Amino acid sequence: MKFSVLVIAIAAMVAAPALADDHAWEFRLGVTAHDLSDHVEDGPNITVGLVGPEIESLSFLLTPRPYLYGSFNTNGLTNFGGAGLEWDFPITESVSFQPAFGLSYNDGVTDIDRNAPPSDPNRIRLATTRSLMGEHILFHTTLALNLELSPSMTVAAYYEHISHGQILGSGRNQALDNAGIRFGYRFGAR
Image 1 (spheres, rainbow, N blue to C red):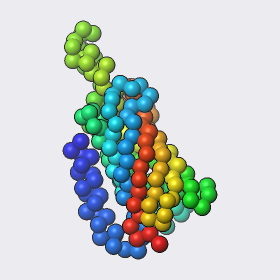
Image 2 (image 1 turned 90 degrees about the vertical axis):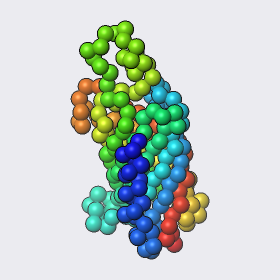
Image 3 (image 1 turned 180 degrees about the horizontal axis):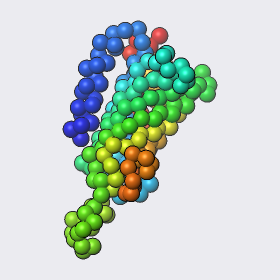
């Protein structure tokens, strides 16, 4: 959790001067249902994010926007923060599809002690109450359906998945699947 808070604090400091520019930076606040696939961990997550303006120099990648993100579990279980790229594909004048891809760091349990006997209480507790992430550095993938309420206000329903995909690690990979709603406020929107 300390890492997630640090990432968000650094992002805010880096972004603050740019917020005064005439760019549409977007601050997001939301809530997600936590660990939908295995439902080993409980409690909703409170989420915060900051999305920057399109990166014109990455037009060969369909001009993505950079993002910073934090997700904090209300039951003190797995928290994570990440950064990556997000795209915005219009469906109608006010609705768009927003996929995103990046890397995240989580403070969750990577694995249980395989040398502990099966009857070990700590091993049983971790196996039944925590998602075993496999690694602390994981991919972060998001799919969102965004509705523009006004030039400066948005609301979106989204799904996110964090996992190492047997690429950033091997073996244990229970991952996390969350889904929720987020509200956005665009600074400098025209």
